[in-house]
Length: 78
Image (cartoon, rainbow, N blue to C red; front, side, top):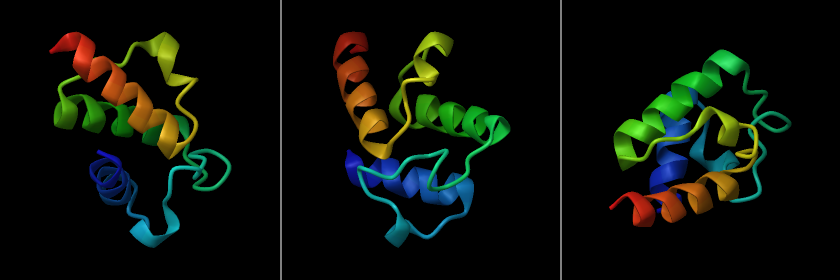
């Protein structure tokens, strides 16, 4: 799961996968802006079949947060 998330972030934001790990912070480390975040959320929803609630987006700050969220909600939604 982590590798799929990292690959998707790298592809969507056009960043080097080598710069990404579970502790990578989207805003602080990658300087992700709100429009990029919208693109990322859409990519995660499409790739993993989850719905990411607007209220939850703010809590998804690191790659690890995203992996954890997707794993938790895939189980619930499946």
